[in-house]
Image: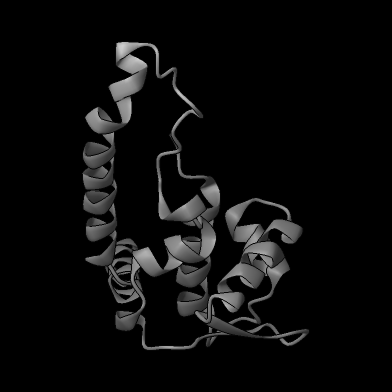
Length: 146
């Protein structure tokens, strides 16, 4: 199991928007340069963030704005926008284990609750961090560089 790089790219986008909003026109090309990826990938992620109601985008002008204060957008919100999980379950179970096998017959009873607990713990941790934390962390790092 691995969360794709689209999640960290989305966080990188928010960090760039916040860091450079007063200095540069923050476009998909600008973001792609910072992230070292194709602008098409950036545009797809921006569309996902927009569809989730996390940002507004003014095409052509590079106007990307969060729709809520940064302390009201959690890493979990971004994760949900970028990595929607099928049927709400992070872990995809193999289809139709053999009911004639004692392990196959009982594997769901053995694992379902444990896997849901693991998913809930990860999601709860993601809810603790916000884009405001990202902004403050970036400010601290840039101040140390100065």
